[in-house]
Image (cartoon, rainbow, N blue to C red; front, side):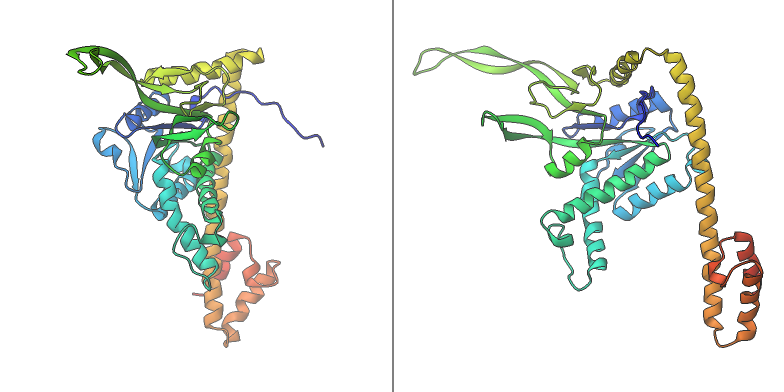
Length: 369
């Protein structure tokens, strides 16, 4: 058996994971909402307002769900995964607003997990969890990425929103210090998601600053006193910065360096980057679209089949649980237990709890009434 397959670029922008970071209030939530609506319609996305985030409050018509803690976040993700084809047939993207807050609410869950796993060595901080030395943070990354990848398995991509700050870094080659606009969170957490997204845009205000004379003279130098004045400013999203002053990224080689902070430009930039890569294949776009639409329909069928199988297994587990409870409650009365054992053997099973056929389980359950 030979391993390896040739990739074909997916033409759907929402098939790729997008991250957008920027300062608070610059308009990240609004532009991502418009981006999702333009590509998937009003039913094609849902914002998860994580932790203490409440950006959706000021945006009319946004589709969102509050996830103040890990339990609610996990509940929402599990519901989408378990009921994708029934309850969320049009859902294409889940927006994490914000990733900073998602990692914050993951930390108490990691502490809880540690204390259950090691009750004799309870901890109160993420730094001490699972042996310390960064193991707690690694576990937080693990559980977050695991939930996000569960979405991808049912055909739902994720978009993450985060905040920025300036950070002084040192060039590893020259040793020179420089200022970079990057995430405001722990670098370890940020790098974990940065390596997983296809597009990382950094939203910032691009200002043109000029020097103007004030009409005054310096009393010592006698020179004209000047002041810095903002001539104009524009909100921009950067995808690639060759000077690495802005911590952006794209897996697509021909993404435009920067765009105005506009949802049409955002859609256009990503579509153009995808189209440029697809053009290298020599195949017709129409042929690829037709093929990928067929693959999407097959994926939906697979997901629906998996959903039904999981629900059937859950029902079977519940029935077997009730049967086990009945046997336990009547373990001293063989007159009540023997009919279940006999029926199980008649159906080809050694014991009732080994039953894996839901119809047989129903028959066994009838004997407990």
